[in-house]
Image 1 (cartoon, one colour):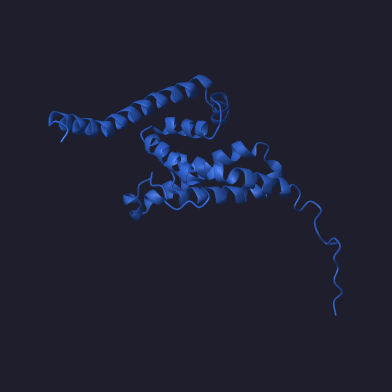
Image 2: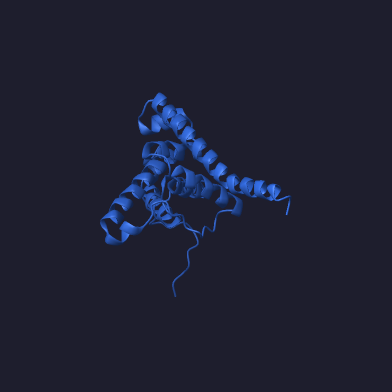
Length: 197
């Protein structure tokens, strides 16, 4: 009969698991935001989760070497998503897939947030790649200066991209709202001309 030992394992590496609690806390705080960040870049929910899982596995293995995990994870997740998109584009089936399709099943999102995010994504797809990229970081809570430092660009360039993106989004939203209101106004005008019938 083997005697059970509830004490510390004498063969365990003392460095193993060091900082693991910090990593677990980081994942709990950042996982959902990371997935949303990648979705904002254009991924489906499943593609974003795959990219984030790939990055977090890499980060776990190098946790003690990464000094800015929030920034590192976003750049690495973007790279993982783009690389997966390149692979998918080479496959014949990928030709008919929309890069802006969003999965309907998102278990961690509240209904209101899902609707809000869908609305934002629908308009963000109108932007060019660089504008969409800076808006993804902005939507994730980064300042123009932080985005510039992170992407190795001038702050003025980032601010210009944000300004042009906002202008384009504002115009698109105004046009969409005008198109939605137009038929209602026309029907109301017709009803009034017929004497309210």
